[in-house]
Image (cartoon, rainbow, N blue to C red; front, side, top):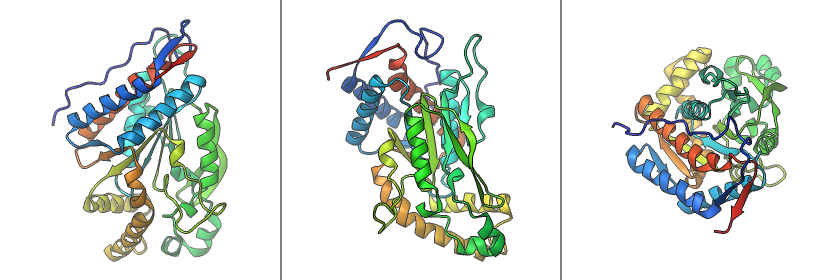
Length: 337
């Protein structure tokens, strides 16, 4: 499959956001129509790599974003991705971050170690990030003492890291709210080598686009009721994505990552990996699969990385042109639908 359209940087009438003297009028409903139409065209162009979920829900989310953005220009576009282990959600979101950085010609504020992919700036432009890229893994709860006491093998056999309860969900919810409102945060940092969480560790700069990805990003704790239940993060996002890959490929990617990251699971045997994978799949069925139908965009990651990256470039281009560029004036005036 050859993608005909190439990534193009939108033309700015001034150096950066908010410097234009004239106000801009947009029709909220019509602009949401444009985005959905362009996304439908990309769906056809991609031959199944990208697929729209419930378009009515997508349209409503986009309208809400446009309306709120019109009244508060610092309001960020929020894009979230949830996928099971090994599906490639981190690769997908890194590709999106890099595409937005190229399109908007600025650096990435990141907790996902992709800053080196950001382009150099044009002469005279400030080095304020144009996209924020967050990884939910930094919000794991601190388990350093428990891991030290149990030892690595028993820790990973007995401690459940594949549920919302393993994360600092309340803190993540608060930080998402801050970034959405255009305010900087300091995120925790989780050290995978010893399971230690350091609070307020990493400065994260708010930007026009915020990407967040995680295994349990949109998961709900079954049977839990407020205030014990984790906050539902799905309504906080304007575009919600699932990333799909068949089980055989996912397991192979997951196992390779476990071997490279910590020498494998347990005694390193295939049986140890198979047993752990069965537990992971049960968690997927409990927490991830039930939320998948509610996602507004679905990505099939079975194609080559190059093809998927081309589609992510196109998604970033459409999103920039339809949802970001209308807000390059000092003030946006909402018009009636």
